[in-house]
Image 1 (cartoon, helix red, strand yellow):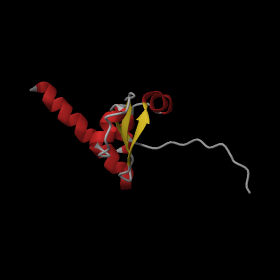
Image 2 (image 1 turned 90 degrees about the vertical axis):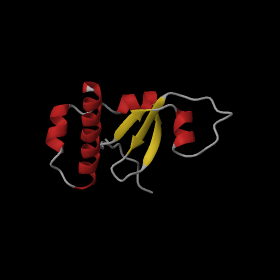
Image 3 (image 1 turned 135 degrees about the horizontal axis):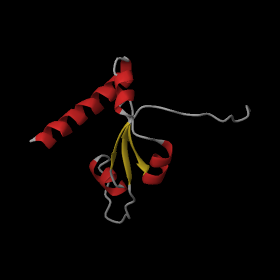
Image 4 (image 1 turned 60 degrees about the vertical axis):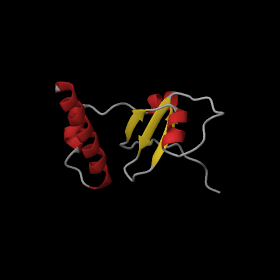
Length: 100
């Protein structure tokens, strides 16, 4: 069997703060009556996969993309473009709501 090697992983994701019980109930449709919730993030990957990450694990492994980085990434194609476009659209919606 091959020996395990150390890798650095990086990917573009969309994320929003969401406690575990809210994620399980609203996204997965699970009963959370007997659960204790933890803070964390709902995470959407470029292929559309949605998961939940505990707050500490997410914040230790990720940082928000800067506006300058978004401009650099926007012209890229494929699944990453859809993630960047979705985030840009969300920011535009927040900006419009703030002005109203």
